[in-house]
Figure (cartoon, rainbow, N blue to C red):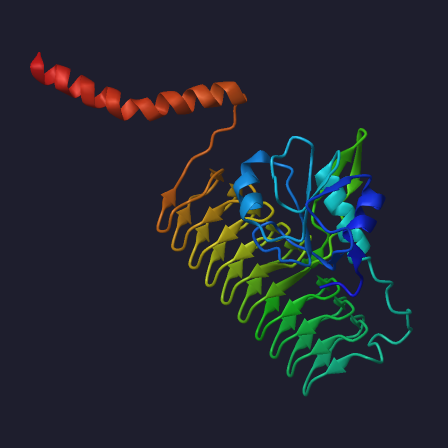
Length: 336
């Protein structure tokens, strides 16, 4: 929850929208997805596929366009609800100013546990907390308000952006970046306007992250990698992704924003996923595959061949008909 607050009428004035079914003096202090929003939260509906979620939402205010049919729901009708929501995120959670720079590599307000080893050239930011026996190699930067558990090891060149949280016994290899901005933009009048990234990253106990991995912080709330999960080199994990426990994420995997993985999922090398999908527990996706929709638990998936989209769609449709055609040919052969 933000320390700031706006009334519904203040947001309507700032965004140039019209309130419906909402008290103008309603106080709003947070931003949430439709399914998580409560009476103090602002949410938005920009895609008709989420209309049912909007109808069931308990949000204090939903930003919508003129086409949305949400009679009885507290809503603010405006031209571009996605961009409106992005602006509200920035107003409620403005980017904090970094703590004043110091020539001392460890900020005076940082707290280091017993037996922590910080190599020359590493820096620790304001209010950071480092657990016992953690080893920080040369060239590591730990940002303001980070929390690092006990027995962790961060190799050279690792960067933890502000508010990143590591559990115990986490290992992060060289030149990985945890907590950088997610890739989020709204198109407004032909320009790509940046969506503020107000979240953070959580790596649970016993997570290991390979070299040159990027894990983006959430737009709101966390990006999460669950206990015991192992991430190979050169992977990209986007904003608000949630990876379950004891998963294996192999080299060059790319997981798009807001995708969730259950426990014990394996994504083999160069797997890509669409955003906003779920891959069920104990599923395996073989190398070079592209996952575009939800996956049930215990699945084993393969396949992706890049070619012109229309041709690929036609090939997929033909491929789906092949089993039936083969069965028909078998019956005809027996009859003949």
